Length: 227
Ligand SMILES: Nc1ncnc2c1ncn2[C@@H]1O[C@H](COP(=O)(O)OP(=O)(O)O)[C@@H](O)[C@H]1O
Ligand SMILES: [Mg+2]
Image (tube, rainbow, N blue to C red; front, top):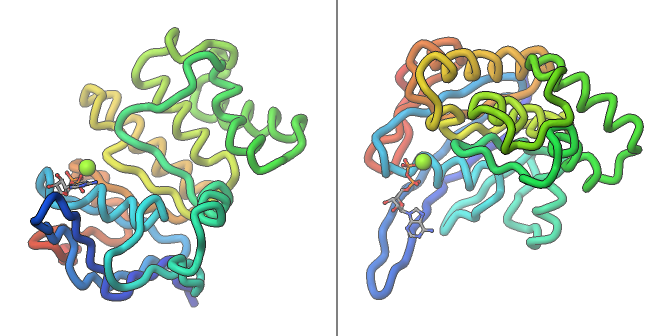
């Protein structure tokens, strides 16, 4: 039997600018089972990032609710939500937001240091993750000395560092060339499986999407199952 990790209950999101209000997501019901992998596709501007931001508690719905392991995130204040994200969600975005003055190893350690984990244990896990993605020789390099693909590998390790229940990836390889993209998306997919995590990702790579448990198209403000 599987448990539902994340649940959207009739989620609507609108953005207000000046006098007008734009509905981006409307009445979405969505459940994400623990251990599953879900791919979302859709045209540029259709609301994919908005959907992921709400799923990862970076943004709140305008109406409806989001439950994580049955707990309503709407009842949490901003500090509690930051803490929640640090423990339970790992994000990988299109552009690698790394701390430029820190080494690859230090960047990966950051989420665990924020959590208050022991330094020795943190360094061991970060080193192991970086080794797993083929960066054992790059531990002490700063992001400026790494290629785009290497930086994205560091971002993936950082997202996995605290062993979060949920990994959210928003077009994680959108800024890389096709060959590196395929390699990195597949690496992300394999790592999430190895670590037994749940994956929610936006991707345009249909081959990768087909490896996911479920694929949805975001269209006309709602999700349509396509496989
Ligand atoms: N913070 C915001 N304020 C106003 N409009 C926004 C905001 N974020 C996104 N939008 C608008 O919502 C729509 C969906 O954006 P987004 O979720 O980024 O789409 P996608 O990721 O599918 O390309 C776009 O029209 C975008 O301009
Ligand atoms: Mg987007």
